[in-house]
Image (cartoon, rainbow, N blue to C red):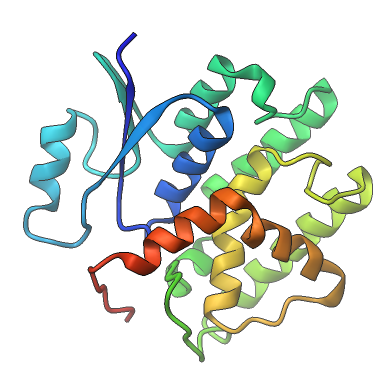
Length: 214
C-alpha cells in the first residue's frame, strides 16, 4: 500500500491543517506531512501540483485516493484505525461527539475571523470584536456540558475527535489573552500539553514564514 501524504499549511496559522494532522497522528497510520506556505504567489500552484482537490489545506493522498477537508480526513482515519479511539465507542457518545465536531466545523465564524490561529504570537484587543464574546461563551458552554457529563479529562473521557477539533481554539485563547474560567483551565491545558500538540507547536516555532495578522 502506498504511504499517506498529508499536505498542510503553515503550522503557525493553519488550524484546519492542525486538525487533520492531529487526527492522523492519533490514528497511528503512517504518513508524511508536506508543508505548502500560505498566502504566497506560488501557493495555489503548489497545491495544484499535489492534487486536483480544491486549493486549500489539508489534503490527504494515498496513491489515487485524495481526501480534502479536515473532517473527511478524520473520518477516514477513524475508519482505517478504529482502535485509535477517534470517536467514542458508545453509540450515544459517538453521536454527541459528532454533533460537537460538526458545530465546530461549521460554526464559530466570528472567533475564526477575528482571532485567527497564530501560535507564536501574543496579540491583545480582539475580544471586543463583533460576535467573538458570544462564540467564546458557546465554546465554554460546550466544554462544561461535555466535561460534566463524561467526567474528563477530555470532552468524552478519553481524547477524541472533539478534542482535536477544539485544540486550535485553545491556542487562540492563549494567543489573544483570553482568560479561561478556572473550572476549564485543566481542560484547556490538557489540549495544549498533549505530546502531539507540543510537537506541532515546536515545529510552528521553527517555521521561517511570517504572516501579518490584520
